[in-house]
Image (cartoon, rainbow, N blue to C red; front, top):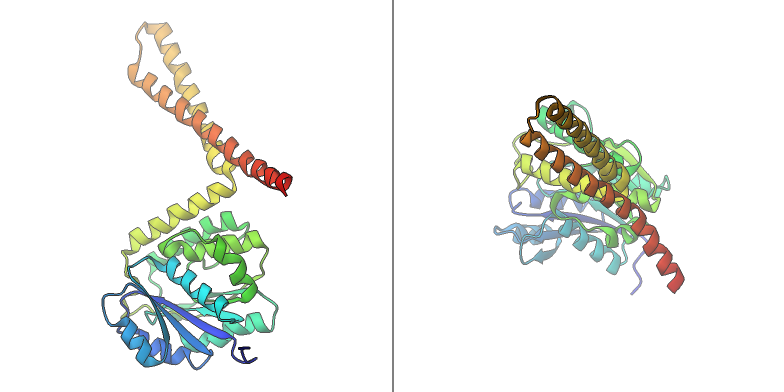
Length: 304
């Protein structure tokens, strides 16, 4: 059955234990899209029940698999049901669903593939420690993105079908790394990414089901690994080379001290061995990871 021309916009709300806020988010989002999909990620409260009563289509995971899994479920639903545009929005009430048209307009009228909400200004109510953590993740994501990133962690964003189709097979991360991974993969695919300012509410809300510090560290570690995969010589080979230089420095110092005093510094020798071995291994890994993708690519071309 062919979808009507105006039935093309889907709101995807991944959530976990959001029974207190999900109903109002669904009702307000319904005003601006053709359908609202709530991906209940293994909640043990009445999130799914409240979402259905508010008018959403609900897909439930049997266990809690993380936000990335929820986003992928929503994207697959959009593709299988012929939606042209998808807006992702958190279910905890921190985003304003009435700003959905602003994000969609960027795609429908300006020829962009993705529009990212930027939490901006005093109205965002963002605590200072969150702003600091956000900037760290922004800069790290920017290394993998080939440019500057203003708000890499905002989950309020819009995608067209081209972006969804390209990104979904490339999302490999779990939990909250999905926002950074989307931006890195979008850059790899050459998609047009635009930003727009949005409000964000924090006061009176428990905006994360996970400890904020562990959340940030888990995202940071995964993003660093993504960046290292893209630029192995820079992020693995160069640190390895620096470690080798440090090892050589301590090694020369150890030999000079032994020549002058006939006393062998065992502790220095251990440091030298560790730095030289780890550094050499890192240099080797950086070279291998840099060359291996080209070898695989050439072998595939030969097979074709």
